[in-house]
Image (cartoon, rainbow, N blue to C red):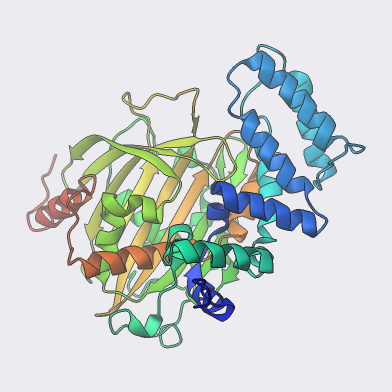
Length: 442
């Protein structure tokens, strides 16, 4: 320490130990101001200014005022001759101008600029690492750490030391590849690629979970020929489906994410069930309400209404039915699908999104778990398939780091089963009991 301040080399060493997500930078007022200053220094301030204007736009209540503000945004940022013209495709620019021309003082939606907003956001994210490594950011961290030595933990998550977790293997010892789970012998492999429309999968008005819901996830994960790898890091890999699944005319790719987590299978499962740690893993969640707990012949299911503050988008909500079972080999399979429920009607304050998929937990050894997640998600609104697929391609390790941090903290305080799990623990126990008794016949 020098004059009460940490040395520059100490700050640099500390920064290397933390994952600081771009979302946190954009959400924290001072960091966002610093990021905008960084953009200005690098002769690229337009994107930051545009995002600031849109933050104000979505808070405007009156449609008349919002419409006038939308026109101003067009003049300042969208016109090719604008003072702060943003760097977007001509297609996006023209589509936005068309939507503005179709709006008026009585009808001007808050999600009018969502597609452009997300495109700019993804472009700004390319500057994330440069900002983290900049002297501007390091100086800020040094000043903050003088007042609060734990400042970095308030804006990021400590990266897991793979050799210091709980005796788990290092990432060099456990490979992370988008391959088939170790035991899918029961799968009939009706390929995901053959599915053309979500309506052919299930009826969202029917509150039911059956073997078909579980088999759909196993088949999707197991059909390796239907996936295209797009990202691989030290800890995880991401693939997208070669063929889209359609929701009406919207064709979206599914995502397959595979990661090896250096903790035991029960530790990982219960950390993801634990509602007390939900906001650690799902940082954008605003509220999660349990609507119903249903029991069927073989399985139980929960129906929840989840509200999300999406990065740089209008708020979304999901109404999701979830169920879980344990496989004969000790693995766990957790399935989810969007449903329609009378206690979760669509609201003008949220755009109703649609998802289905599941998570497959496999025991590698006592200290390592392979987690494979298959997800289809349609954010609806103005978000096009092209923009959404770009989001998938730019996913980083933030989610992985958040899971590891949650598991580690729960182990430190000696918690195994969660006290609050939206009754997912009850779903698991019910399925286990049902497997021990013969099925009822009609």
